[in-house]
Length: 251
Image (cartoon, rainbow, N blue to C red; front, side):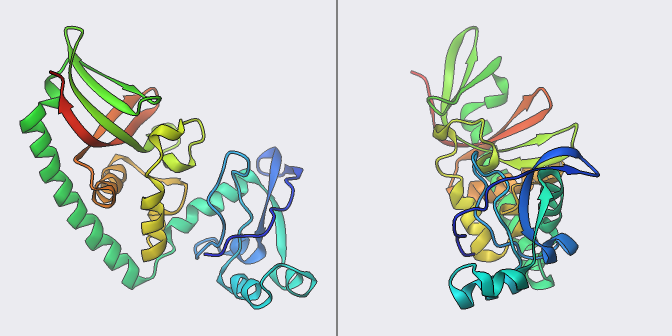
């Protein structure tokens, strides 16, 4: 994946499907067939829908080393609403050939089995489910389990992502800009692991998923980050998944 040049300024527009919206730019090939590799920077709070293009347009970019008058016309960059962009981006989670899909299934299976072992060890050593309550603090990046108002177990955490029941979607923590930096300092390594191996589910910011998908992703995260385990915390609209590191009993 190649870093883009300066992003094209966002433009307000009216979408026939979604109404008034901020604009985003992508090549016509992605608009016509989103289930393919996307070349774009990761989203940021300032640029939630970074300029994106396909493999063919990436070759044009590399030939010139930049976008210019010679290759921009061939790329046929289109202005779309951000909702249309997000829908197309979500569809690209299926952009894996048969060989990569098989490797992804194998990876998920091995990581999920390893996570089951880690979870069993945590249960035996710390009895996390036996405590009356849990509290997480983003500023300190910790998760505390307590009973009777007395802290019993504390873990350092890295937020993995969340499942929203109303939309039926998974959203990676690195694409959730309401979170503090303290709880998303390591998760970029998982996205990079996805880029290195062509694993689209680790790279696409948000896509249709359920709790089973979330646990599978959590297993891969635990493997990449060498976490001791994973905790699933209920939210108002689903679940938040956290990787647990440095877990210890409170003396």
